[in-house]
Length: 116
Image (cartoon, rainbow, N blue to C red; front, side, top):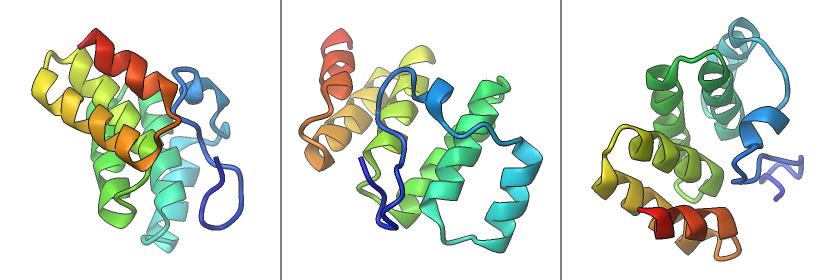
């Protein structure tokens, strides 16, 4: 999937955490501070937080992405995964359904919705 800037952005795949650009949390925090309206940077910071085990901070960033770009299906997918892992099934279902609405080809969201 391409971002609105035309750069490749993260897919909603389960291995998206592995395939995101490998940048440090501190680098991404600085970039987000300098570009607070960039949903791709906020998304990448969420991925970096998730990689470091900071799921609460990751979720905060993914919710920020959705404030900036409500149709960002990858942020919805990963937020759904986080909710699912916390047993928050209603919230997980809502995120997966929204991800599918905005990206009907997101078979990972369909799969996880079926798991809930």
